[in-house]
Amino acid sequence: MNSETPHPKGPSVTALDKLRLSHYMGRLRDSLPTISGKAWKEIKQGLVSDINEAAAEIGMKRALEELGSPAELAGRYREALGLWAHPLYLRGVAVTGCLLAFVTGIAASFGWGMATALEQAGAAGPAEADFLGLGLTAVPGTLTFTFRSFVVPLLLLVVFVAASRLWRLIPALRPNQVPARA
Amino acid sequence: MFEDQPDSQLLKGTLPLAILALLKAGDSYGYKMVDDLHGVGLVQASSGSIYPLIARLAREGAIESYLKPSPSGPARKYYRITPQGLEQLEVSQTRWNTLCAVVARLLDHSESTPRSKEAK
Image (cartoon, rainbow over all chains, first blue to last red; front, side, top):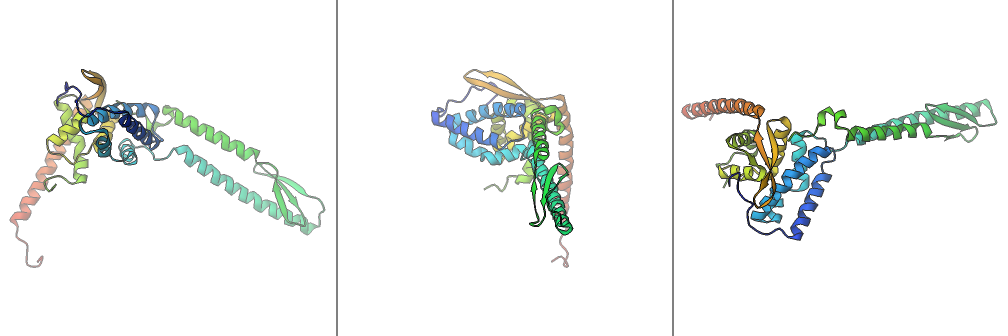
């Protein structure tokens, strides 16, 4: 073959082949969640053209088999392009969740201590307090407490997720994941 | 069957050099590069390894792509080597030649030096 080689006239591409290719590319895309839209477009453009070229010679099934599974190919692209396997915002959400759990745990301890103190002091009514954005209501006698509001931590979580999504959508904010030059 | 083929790690290290060398000879597209590499004997170089590598070289700026209409099908995505790629090829080639010379000397030395009794 040379650079002017016409497309080979091998097995014709059937509707099933197109479906196979579409399914393969869909799974490949799903396995590259952190790739930018522009970089994916560049990859897809060349890959689809090359797969069709191979399919015309050896058939779509074999052409796709030679590439390996979509997950394997995605792994090679991730390695080659330095992409992360999972979106970073998921890590952020996980970290935020852990922080919230930690704060809630501390607040729970605080509320428990407050309820114990009320009981020991012989107080009759419930006592209310705010602790790191969490409203606490300690009831003496039964040593129970309730959280009055999760509004502040929930608001923080929403802001974090929104900022994370925005970070993912704007390539300029991600110096290590600029779109591939091609 | 593949006794005369490089192992996968060796192949992985030399594929960028091979791709840049191919593109120095002339612009090409992914499938043709796979075909050409197989043609020169690198039959273990799979398309699944070569396409991501092409994407990496493009990202690094060593090669760049353009679409070229084909006489009998959809436009193909061609790649050409950039000045940066030529420079990279030259450096890699020098390193490769040096490594080959060193390893060849080592192998020659090991063949010409009999093993001592202690080693046996």
